[in-house]
Image (cartoon, rainbow, N blue to C red; front, side, top):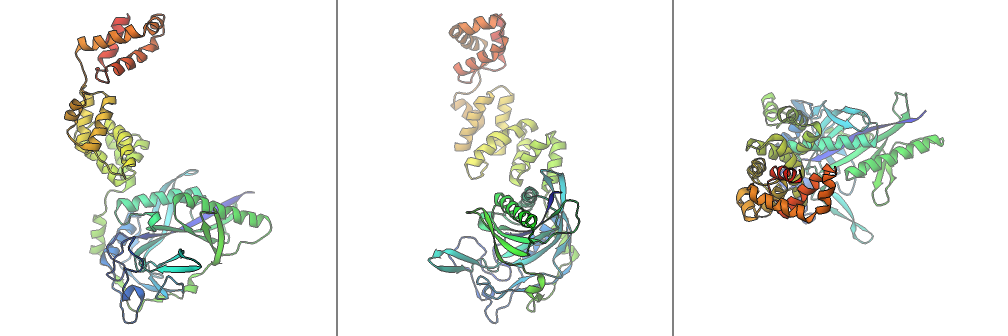
Length: 473
């Protein structure tokens, strides 16, 4: 009998705010170490926390986007633990009465198709600082700039059955959070961090095995690697007659290995108690409804609408809705008059390829792309020539027709001129002409290509095959 993997995820997401959760210090990434700190985030005597309203708005929007129930009353709590990067000796979080509970995320499992992951809870908390082990020889440095930065923690049920499913869920969650603008979800900057609870059990069993928590995972690729390693470690341990001990494991990306850090804490180890410096958080139903009204169309709904409204395949709709920016760009192009399918093809190819090389910037305005597509469909430029026009528009801007004329790419539909190019090609390729006349009619595409080459893309592609067939008989 084989083994079944059981994974639950705790995702910490930094909220997109200017200031920290309980003070006015900047929450910007990359400042000089220990420059964005004050008595509140350092926990100095007499300093009192004040909740950041914008952070609460973003947290509520995240909960609503995930289908959760936002509670009108929630409590802040102190989570007590002693670690060098936590200057107060405690973290302000939420425990017994979180901001929101319930909800789900639908994601595409590589093994089970569309699956729902349950969201158990979503709560608000502040971040800790950062320990730096590579700044000074044989020493650890502390940067407390991150201390107090606003986070939400999203906790799932034990719903994932493989590391690949965990990765697919996280990618879907990231997309939703980016769509609603609550976070940039940049794992390299620590804006999205993942802790995973992993256990294994014999297939067919319902009881959960002893879990371990895997930390220090900072990319989606590492999520798969780290959880796969921990799964394999537990299976090997059990099959050799050992027992899995509940503990925290750290993933080492350089060594591609997991190693024990400490015994896994339970909630009672943190000695939670209500935060004495903060009253209960009370949110009125009208205030919550305002946040609901501010949510944009979510990725799954937009994807379904694109399929229905623009008659796109699900695969193409998925690409075009991969980010809100790309989706808005595509729709703007269509609204500017472009054919929906032609616009989809251009966005998925030339537009996204150019963006990939230029920091994800969409450099050609949607109106210009729509005008370029119209030039193709009107026979003014060929598709191949239009690619050159697009590259020029991306680099220098301008009007598509003017650019096409300046580059000498406007198609020639004059029958006499095109006939001259056809004669030149047939005169140069006499052997291929003979083969064509002996029955190799597929060579017509070769001749078309040669005419387009000789004309430098100017020959009307609808006229070329017609004239070739007339001349070849």
